Image (cartoon, rainbow, N blue to C red; front, side, top):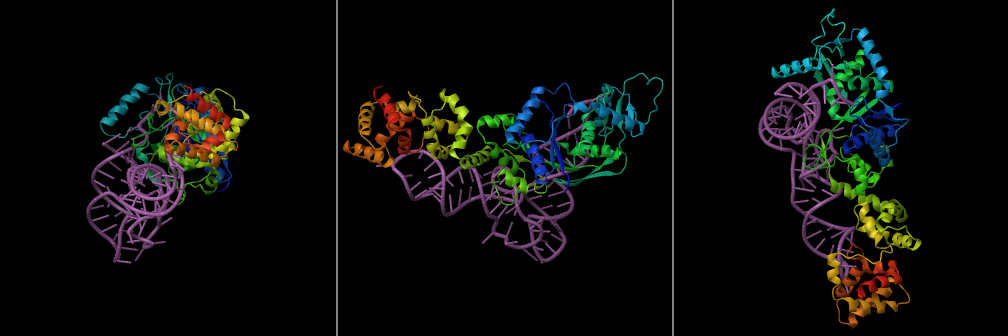
Length: 466
RNA sequence: GGUCCCUUCGUCUAGUGGCCUAGGACGCUGCCCUUUCACGGCGGAAACACGGGUUCGAGUCCCGUAGGGAUCACCA
């Protein structure tokens, strides 16, 4: 398939939500798979609702996801003159006409038609000759839709979908203030930008039939369409803010890795046999339009989490550390020292073992920083209550160790417990509480070793004297 | 309401008429490992929306019913 060109065309009225992110991903994947181009076009023809902040949010969301677009992002509004020119051309060719009805009149007629259960085509001026009374009035430009026959789209996802032309309305191309509508703008832009494949949400499927008519009126080739099903919330209803209708930046903040997000979004509505773990390079290799599912999919945080766990474990300890470093320093309030860094890298495998999201890693890693005095949870405080003397002598026991290694430490603690006729748990639990303050932590002996004798003793003594 | 689309375990899905006593993943769950938390290992429960056809044979094809969704702007 030569010269594939796809595009992602969001309207800048908010952040890049999860559905848009998936649409962008599919477009990107398809283009990369075919060695084609992936373009970004901002659909900002609605001046009132478009904001610069939203444009930035969309771009940064795509950056985070690693969806690089080719060339500069295009502003649809910037081509308004070209859109008007096309409308004029259609007018001259008799394929469009001037409609002098006001917005209010139109709304009224529409309501009536609906009451009578008739299709509203908006064609009240279609066959009326303009006369002296209309000459000075503002007008909208409408496309003359065919009245007979059918239009069928061979959608790459939905299959062949046919609609009666009689249900198509004479859509507005130019508003009465002379500005182009989205319907006109998309078609013109998609043609001008040489888009070969339009991959978008299936909320646009109905629009596609009308857009096809516009392509044909201009004598342009119609691109291939692929309308992908929408993403729903966990309850099967439309995504709301309560669910996952957050910006992708929110997912970044929650501590998901972009690679995990890509894998999740890819599998949400697309499949490749039984494969679940599909890194991006593999995805580019495999992606196609045919394997996109037809039904809407629900968003599921658990599955996203499990993918996130997988990709966190894929990262080398030092890589993971550098991705959380900023957050870690924010948490501890200090820059990372060399020893702290060494401890964290050493402990990383066990930290990651019990982490689902990046903040879990941050918390786990923070235990290996110099964070004295350790702040205690209520539970930890209760565990420590009355154990001061025991901790004191345990610390003394540990001070005697000259070879600070796990097996040596373990042996020391065991003999310490035995000598006092204490169960291991009775010794381990207070030590853990003193060292971690009650934060989730891994193997205690390993923690001691990595923390080092000095820091361990210091933390123990903090609680022993408390 | 009109038009269009969709319907396999709780969720994401495999399945393109016989390989399906329906497979995988997440989640749930039993056991094992673990003198701590988790990880891990081995198991388990769990679905073809319903009703008619077509066919030697249907999750797979057709029709109907039900349910869900999208859309019906001088928004995009």
